[in-house]
Amino acid sequence: MIIPAHIQSMTTIARHPAGAPASTGGQFKPSARAATDIDLSAPTSTLAAFLAADAEVDRLVHDAIESGLLIENRTSPDCWSTPEIVIGHTPDGQRATASLTFTRLPDAQSVNHDDVPGVWEVSAQASYHKGRWVQDCGYLTEKIQNVVKFAPGVDQTSVAALAAVRSEHLNSFNPGCAHQGEPTKDGHGRSDLDSVPPCPHTGYRYGSAWLARAADPVKVADALAALGSATKVEPVR
Ligand SMILES: [Zn+2]
Image 1 (cartoon, rainbow, N blue to C red):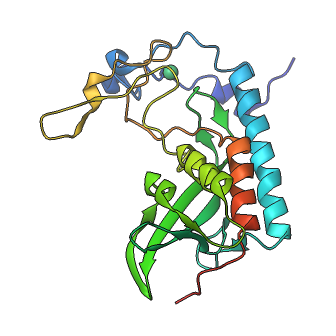
Image 2 (cartoon, rainbow, N blue to C red; image 1 turned 180 degrees about the vertical axis):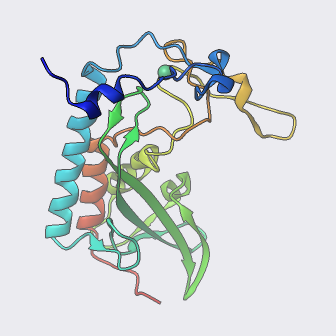
């Protein structure tokens, strides 16, 4: 067999393994290299589960876009939000509103160390108003469960669905993998990232990346249904 000259020349290039010391052209020190005992080249069951859950969220998002519940954000690409929907009042008279935002993010690493082609990120927000004034706003907290006087189309089930979807808030931003626990707090209340042992499978260091989890489609469906059946929308100011 005759090998073309340009391919022959390629075989003469000195290649350095990724784990070779930096002085010899490798990218990482051998001691810093994560040793993996997971076959990262084979399709995994965790990847299949991720893709199935994310595909289901994709279907829910598209249904909500079609029904007009989710509206494309004019300033952020690949981002759709519900309006600010009135949920009810807190016992001290604050009017509570909630909204959900879905953003399509590009390829990422999952909490199970799978390469995933993309993920729907869920963001759940709430605001509390007195008259025209916003008292408190940010991501949806357990405060939503204090709502007592429900707005039209809202009931205890809707509030429970909103409280439940909180666990899916920013599902694409996980500092730890599926095989790690949570860090302990230091004396100043800060998370001590080094208190979490490296992943026993891959050596992944807690907090060294953002790892993605597919959102739970059941929680997403229930929360979208809760907002979809509520009929009062906070006017845009
Ligand atoms: Zn891990």
